[in-house]
Length: 277
Image (cartoon, rainbow, N blue to C red):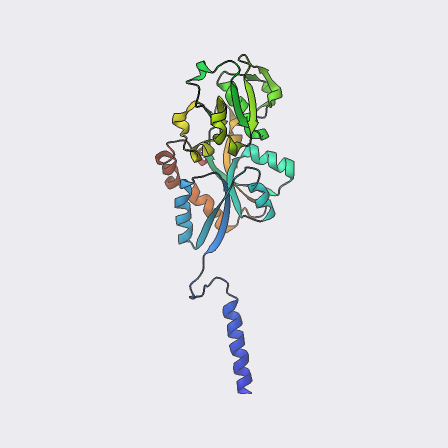
């Protein structure tokens, strides 16, 4: 009888040890893993966030996607825990189009678009009939047209706000040929066109410096134009995860002076701390 009782106790002990799930083979507690979806590289400003999270027992993995169309779908499907690659305008358009059950956790960066070129010296020398490449998604494409308008190259229907299309161009004095491609492809196609409107993070991925290599850089004056706040980039999570502890820590550690310092030192001020606006 004693042997039976001891056997039962031994089996129970094995089950209890095996059910912990947070201990590795050495008996040490394993970190929780959180997967964050991003687009483009490098992401130097995530380094201090990853370091702080590790001290809290959380391993943050950056999953890099090649296209803007993927991370929201992956988040909605549960393939990742959180993403950080888009502004409010793009997110709201995606939710409207695909009925994703995702929502904003917090603000991250202001990432200005820039007008880049390998062939034109300045705005005054943009030639007649020049080819300009812009992103093909509704939000960034419309935003690119507004940038071209602000640069004095075209005019668009003001009733369209930040979402005009090429059909809404009301004035094109230089007969510019405006083409579109996926946002993530525009930097690699820069050599094939006269000019291209490129997202700041993607430009940096290709070794471009927004503050130095543009002939026109987007100006986002939130006081003069409150609607521009729709262009603030955000952390996005699934609905219901807004109070998940490890995700709130990501927000806390991102919105920090350490991250802000990297914007200035590593990215030459190309990004701004959106949480301060």
